[in-house]
Image 1 (spheres, rainbow, N blue to C red):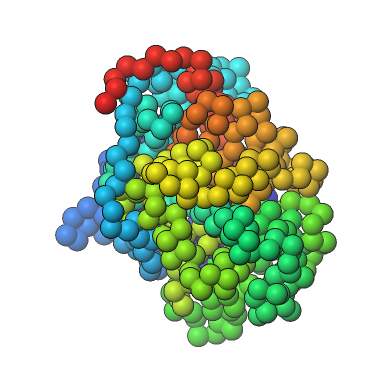
Image 2: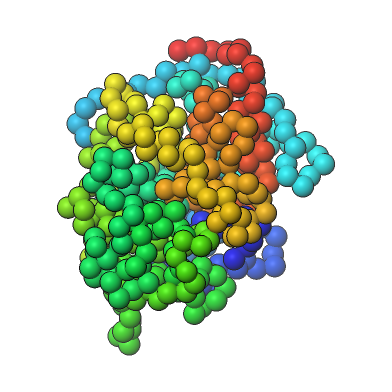
Length: 445
């Protein structure tokens, strides 16, 4: 694990076939322009040329630079389940487009050379970014093969949606955060999760044996991946064959409630709890409780295991504008599109953050002073910003003081956020300060 920045797990459904390819060769990695998936022509043609065909089964689709195409086209490659937006008309986002953001400068962490906002987009292999200020679109850009009507893998931003659903049910009294997991899911009674509380799951302070060291082929994250992989298993495979089966095998390590440990298995366990309490899958619950109420432009979708269980820890794919809509709803204390979607008490609890001592024990140098609450990352900076994060640069950043939301999809060649945090986090905060203090807008629509 890279201790300089919090990890955000590669989707487990992707990983069993990726171990040899996770470490890049010594060759220089192409920059954002040279690796542009539209320029490289992946999957274009009837059929595409053999050297431009990508497949899920052999892992070719997730090798850089091919992954820059795949993250915008997961549904073409793997089984998924729909997250319906409902039948109501979409809520049109108002626009006040600005032309003064690209030139905004900031100082990346650990650097002495200023960088512009526009330069940061290429540095972070951005596929698309939307900035809302006071609910209006002030900036919107797309790169590569992602278009406004397209969808993109949200990776571990998915966890935040799962955590938000749990926070909603806690605020409504349908889920007791102090109860033991075994009381909701008896099947987990013999696992390490059984005697943890729901709150410890939600805040990832469980004591479970689950390594996310991708360089270790024996790490539990690979067992999780093998269980969730929807492809047929090898004849000699005798391990768990679904997410639910895997969760029952997780062993204890450490003590519940003593420290923050970022472990994807917690989110899958929370997804099982939500499904048991609500009688709905995470995908159905997300559609009914949030997505169909946002005025979203598009359906979302989630990857699933061989039994159709949605990957609660990393399988969500959405349109970029719709991700921004979700963020603006959270910024507005859960109220959006003329209705209270998430209880205000749930949002207030998230914004207060978690236990700082518990988080500090994880040793994330780039996130000094942050905490984690209901699967949201809370900065505790002077603006009270908080965010959702995912591998390869997925981000939803909410700054209440600046009345700003940034939704970004990316396909950075390095999975860990340590590769983009030094650029991304200062850029986000610089833009928040700029919008908070500079009222000029260029084009209103």
